[in-house]
View (cartoon, rainbow, N blue to C red):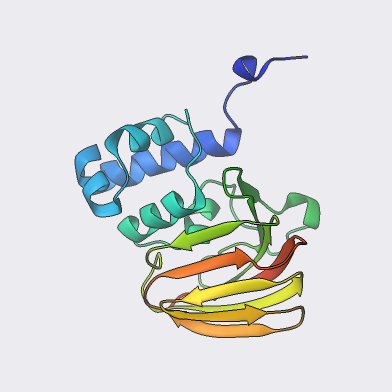
Length: 193
């Protein structure tokens, strides 16, 4: 059995790092400029671009805001070309191990379409705060499938139980928290403005 130090970086992290480096190069930005725009240190950015680390959900959200992309759009760019039919076994999955968040792109972004569907899973106690939306005015529909979810939109906290749906446009800070003793699973419909 291989030790953790012998296992190479995750292929998705390698493609993600390469895409982040390409986005920075396309804009002619230095690591310092991206750090200033995102609030993420130059060393962390450099390590993420080299796939030495996987960015957290909050860091990825900040990078998406700096580059004007939704998280699904960015993650969709590191996957192969989107298909019309995406089988469950082929749906891209991304995990933020530090926060207990798993994101599955059920209906990934597709050229010419503004909407996408994501499944989110939060482990008990998971709490993710985003300081800004990746794209201002992003429309979201959050439908809880299992467990309890507390969603804070700027200063207002909403408690959602299975079957509840919260609809909003995101302009400021948001927070997603598993509000019960069981894991939370929810569907997130995202529509670009």
